[in-house]
Structure formats: C-alpha cells, structure tokens
Length: 344
Image (cartoon, rainbow, N blue to C red):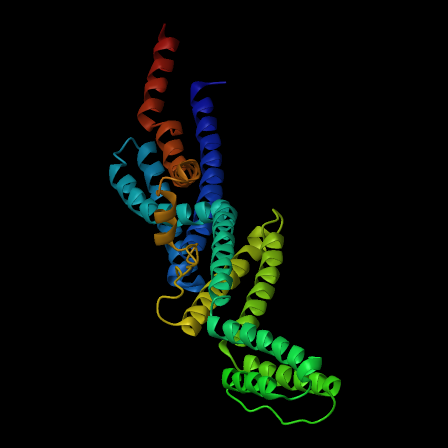
C-alpha cells in the first residue's frame, strides 16, 4: 500500500475517531452543564444555555481540526473553546460533586441534627420540670396539712371537727386560696369527705397551673423526639439517605427550633436558651453551595476527583485534535520522502 493511501486511510480513521469522541464528550458536557445550572437558571433556561454552549464548542472543535489539517494556527479557536469550557466547568463540577457527595452531606448533617435534637429536648425537659416550684410547694404543703387534718378528725381525744381540726382547715383554705365545703357526719365519714374535697380543689388548682402546662409540654416533647428518632434512623440507612435524608433534615430542624422557641417563650427571660438549628445543605445543587462545601477542608478527595473529571470532559476533544490530527505538511513530507525513495 502506498504512503498516500495509508495517509488517506489514517485521515479517514482519525475523522471517525474525532466524530465519535466529539459527540460522546460534548453530549456528556451538555447534559452535566444543564444539570449544574438547573437551580440557577431553571431547568428550561439551563438546557437552552447548555445547548448553545455545546454548539459553539462543536463548531470550534471542527474549526480547530480543520486548521490543524491545513497546518494553520488553531490558537484562536482554542481560546474560544477554553472560554466556553470555563462555563461548562462550573456546571459540570456542580453536577458531579453534588451528585456524588449528596448522600455524604445529608448523612453528616442528619447525624449533627440528631445530636442537637437530643440536646435541646434534654435541656427543655429539665427546664420545664422546674417551671413552677410554687405549685410543687403548694402540693406538698396541702398533702401534709391534709394528713394532719385526717389524724385530728380521727383522734379519739378530740374526734370530729374540733378546734384544732378547724384551725388546720383554715390553714388549708389559705394555702389553696379557696374555702372548703362544710360537711357533717361521724369522724370516719368526715375524714373521707374532707380528703376527697381537698384532693378535688388541689387537682383543679394544679390543672390550671404552669406546672400542668409544663407537664403537657414535656409529654409532647418526648413523644415528638421518639417519632423523630425513628424517622432519622430510617433515613440514615444507605438505601434511604438520598431519597429521605432531605425531608428528615427539614423536619428535625423544624422540631429543634419549635421545641426551643416554645420552651423559651413559656419560661421567659433567660430561664431557657438554645441555639437555632439550620439546614446547612438546603441549597445543595447550587454552584455557590458546591464550591463552599467542596473547599472547606473536609471533602478534598471528592472535590479533586470531581474537578479532574469536569476538566477531562471538555479537555479530551482538543487534546485529541492537537495530538492525533496529522497536518497536511506532514503528508507533504511523507510524499516527498516517497518520491526520493522511488528515485533511488
């Protein structure tokens, strides 16, 4: 086979390889760029922008190859290609990094908020248990006086409602802030009736007290925490974190802030303070979030791999053009060498 035929065959084969690589890698770039700019521009505009950039890069790729085949300088088209590739890089990097780091980011944040939930519920319950020490004092005092009254009513030496029993009833009424009903009967009947009357008035007072409200809040907090703990454990499973992690974080953050705010408002002042929780990765998929997350010193390996892949997607086509495309000058050189060999 002559050198001319071999060169023509090489040129044809090179064109086929060039078309395949250009189609494959520019298609990948268009896809990733559209995904990367989706949250910034919206899906429709992102696809239009990505497709327009892709067409420009396709045109510049053919222009670079044409100039290389003619032995002309391809620096101009290369500069234009690089300018387009810069825009694609941001989209590619955002799409790749967010896709492959999404689960890890959600897992770390969900673990963090689970600890915050435990901390805020523990401190809130402890604070609410001290919400109404006055009611605790009243309850203990009334129960103590009731015991004294019942003993006095049953005392054989002064059974019934004697002077001492009436004196104790007066102290109980003052402590409760309400008069007791006057009853009559034998000592056993009086003890039972007055015991029930005191318990009823005390229960009514406690039900309307801050202590009762605090007890209801404590039950709600504990129930809510148990529910969230179960949801978090389910979301943290490897097969669920991507699909359920975001919702679990939203609900946990809302619960932390809601429990903290309600407890703070109920107790007032500085009786209870807490740190507001935030969904740190709420904007995952946005370019600003991607770069701040990638280069915060915690995800270097994922960031570097994503960066190299993003560069390679758009760099491979010009690399093949500049390395694999044979210039016409080279073909002329081989043609001259063929004539010299024939002369010899």
